[in-house]
Image (cartoon, rainbow, N blue to C red; front, side, top):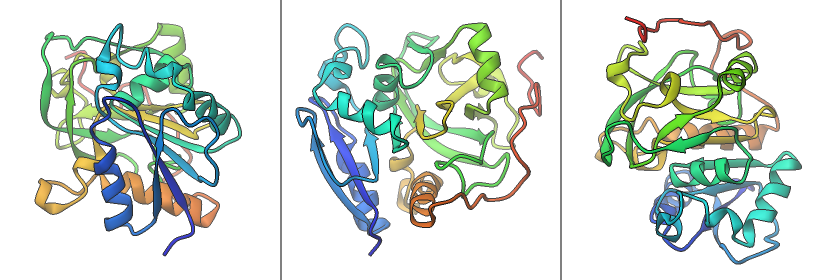
Amino acid sequence: MSKVRFGVIVFPGSNCDRDCYYVLKDLLQVKVDYIWHQEEKPKGFDCLILPGGFSYGDYLRCGAIARFSPVMEFVQDFAEQGGLVLGICNGFQILLECGLLPGAMLRNQGLKFVCQFIYVRVDNNQIPFTGAAQPGQVLQLPVKHNEGNYYVEEETLKEMKRRGQIVLRYSTKEGVVTREANPNGALDNIAGICNERKNVFGLMPHPENSSEPILGSQDGLLIFKSMLQYMEDGEFRYGGGEEFRYEEGREDDLDA
């Protein structure tokens, strides 16, 4: 068994914490423990996961209350020291609220909860969370959210693109980024982003719910395998490709 130890943070209202735990413990057979949101100084973890759900009932804004949980000071310190932090759906929203990731999450464009399989294109495979992917690889993952409409100011978006922080974008099965492939109206079809240091990653789709064939897709396992691979090796082992360079409009059809 790998010596890497994951921690899955549990907030009141989390509902995908056990799914993440199952993928790590039973499918990947790595060490994993739950971390209750009131713990202030957890010890011995190599990677933290903020799972999906409806923390604190999504009152005020999604993640707005959870970001003040006692454990979040530890999460911020952990990230600042270079530790890997993954935020899935509500976990992504919490990372936005606490400032570990740039931008904000708005209500879905259609003002309806969306629950469906979608496709995302890997636009940067040179970070710890997507290192096992091929450049431009398309993943089939499920989404289930009411506030997934990502927004950030134009100047910040330009800097994020330049730094390779746009990791996943909603696309067609063929990898073309189109308006029709966007389930929530997210700016520039953004489905997942990382921080400038590349050790904090947030995404709206649920990789833990697409990690076995019986679920209709096991593409999500790539995210967890990438993290494990990075931590075991202590270095990147990219799926391939040259150093990331964002190409404006590459295989996109947003203006059509």
